[in-house]
Length: 143
Image (cartoon, rainbow, N blue to C red; front, top):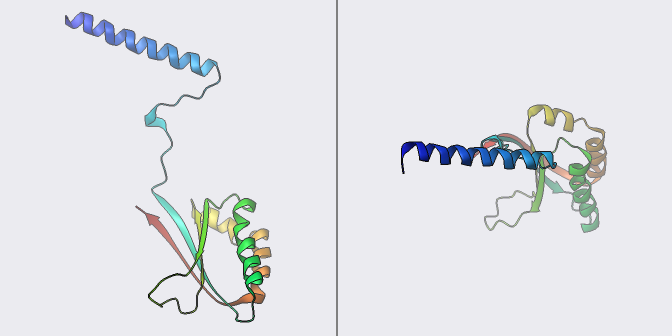
């Protein structure tokens, strides 16, 4: 095969690809080359909140707090991710903190919207009667 024949096959392959992409776009498909795919942000702002509940608070009371906190992901669009769990460490170093919540934001501006948000304030009112201690740490996470 000569250099010219090789170039023609490459050109015809490029032309075919362009026709396929154009056709898909005309049909309403969004086609983005891999190099334009949106990458996962390299850093995310993590907001860790740990609670120690009052001894007088029942399991039902605590579950209402957990449910109210979980609902913030649906109510506040600036929350990029949310997860929570209860302590199960064998080390015995929780100092009475039983519940841990991780709220993730893409930017500090998102956190600035979240903290005074009316839905967040409503959640705090549900929490207050049952809260003994709280610990909050925010940090920028990167892989």
